[in-house]
Length: 78
Image 1 (tube, helix red, strand yellow):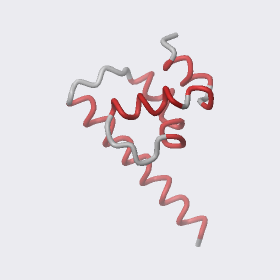
Image 2: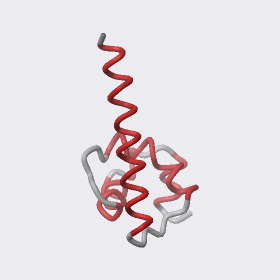
Image 3: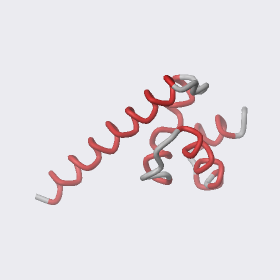
């Protein structure tokens, strides 16, 4: 039962992030698909509950030392 709940929670989290990203694109979000792919897992882990693209970027920057290498590279402008 717990395993099923965790899978459902993870699916909902990804769906929520996809919605946030889509809304960000509509409001002038400038991130590329590559940047979004690189940072999606880190955004889900470190920025859960953050609800707009600028706040997600700020959250990722605040957690840059804890990000996976691919996301860190994107955030640091590499």
